[in-house]
Length: 293
Picture 1: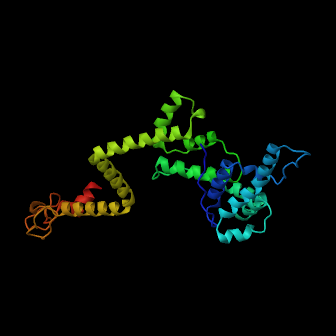
Picture 2: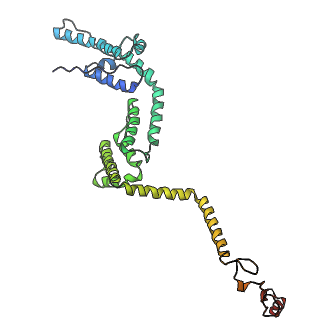
Picture 3: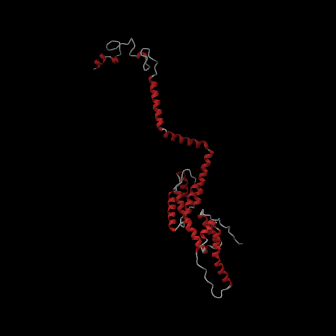
């Protein structure tokens, strides 16, 4: 049964890193990739070649033209003008690679930047495990497209060491059950994703408890944010209570003040000092003060 792979998407100048992978697979499926990798001409025929040898030699020579046709038809007319002067598929392939991926020096700098970006990745509290793993793999794939080797075990280690605290119990249970240095990224992500789904289901079943927890957290944070206001409010309440304590008696009929009872008023007409027997209170009596001295 013959196999005819579908042609790749036409490259128009965008997403070269995707097109180049698809085009390479397409050429390999047609057994034409060797013509792109090397510019070496097929070995010339010997004297008195056989019919099979002539046929094989013709097929080897035709590979270059077939590969060139695939490349020319796999790009838009604007991109075709940049490779139309190329004499071989390898020359056309290298021209596109240099233009859309840069020189070797540029690619090395891109790899350095992508590796730095990979090292700085850390999962946010608002992210899901799927979103985080997809972001990591996008960076890793860009590094690999630039020709750099990147081991899967390093990606797994990065995910494990940058997870939030809510996944700590799951990582501990996985570490007890198996060797995390040999676990696949898809297996790790699926286990953590299942944990996220269970927690989301419990929150949906008990939304009131989750709402109360969020309300308590919001209230405590609001208290911390409004602490100066609360202090002013408490001070005003204390002053009001103190003023209320001062005015807890009815107005005195002698002095009209509200901070004492009538029998303790110093200005009542029948008051008599116990020390000198005159009409004033003993606390302001000069004779009383001299006697104490």
